[in-house]
Length: 485
Image (cartoon, rainbow, N blue to C red; front, top):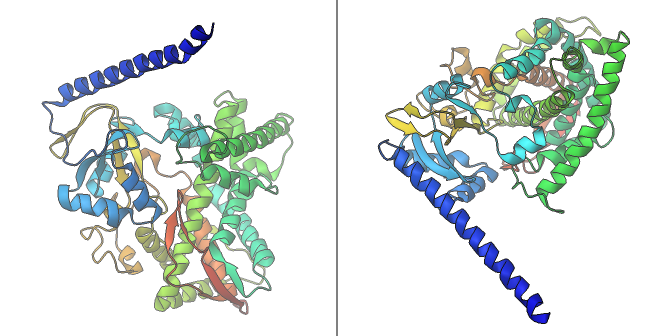
């Protein structure tokens, strides 16, 4: 009996060895077949790095230090050109740069490429969210979101956003002489997307739950207790439980024809699609989760970087303040801003665009080739990933002369298509782009007309984990000033 028991581990090890060998042989066979299929095709230049790992470690190191352009992209572009191959997170990947590359790949979504996010992101954002949908299903969900952000929808949003900003400043800024700008704006942006856009009340702890999910969005999908991804999945389940309850209550209200102001908001539009059988409950929940992430994290970083550049360029700040003083002076006491007022904030939007050019809220995104793609004399094999980056054009001197120089006036003239891509482009252009614009313009109006302010740390570093953020929260010194008349 002892002999039999002792032989069990040996048997298990033998079986495992056989399985590993079979997997290795199958993998080798697939690689050989792939090589044979590509043998007559000219692949882009570049190095694939170590097996499976490739150049992932170098990529993540550069991304975390917010030096993706300087430490990863530029050295390889200098060596190989605007298109080169590498291996990232286990996948052969072709990185492309330039406005023409952006246009080619982003406009050929669903034809040549499809969105391809890491497994951890897909599981945490939701398998039924819009970023996972293709073709007609993508258009259907995008249409439901876009309808709430039409001109009529945006006009209705402006006073709601103004009210949220006013309340936030009164609660979090009033009576203080210093404020950590980034976390403050993040809290505000979170409440704007939930309360103003979706009509969902913000409950204590909700922001922290969403933050917990974001932390695992690009982590290794290892669902073991204590791991970052495991913690993020746990937070995702808590969020999902809350949102399912919200969606079901909203459906019940709408079925009972309880007329409320919130019915014009995005959540009601999604629930209406659920009631008509056009969307599932999971699709509604997953898209709400994605919208919250997409709308508050990137907008918060954009506002922080705009304020940083204004502080570093006093002349730009003075000109921007003049624009807002003039708009405020045209309003009667207690009169709200309107959508038409935001259209007068032309210089402010130039400053915002130039700041997002230099500090894009997203570095780019991955696509997957669904056919063999011929581009620039090279073949990108079916199944390979394609990574386009905002940095690849935002710092291109052909599109933006003197790209390291902060110059908002460059946006007085039309920008070449697909050269400026902080919100992506093509069929997957960020659906919340107009909401982000409103949030930015209206917050800056309240900030510069209500407060004098200055940065406490002008050389604060920017890091990323996984999205970019100022490492010290961007503390600012504030002092209230008399309302403009």
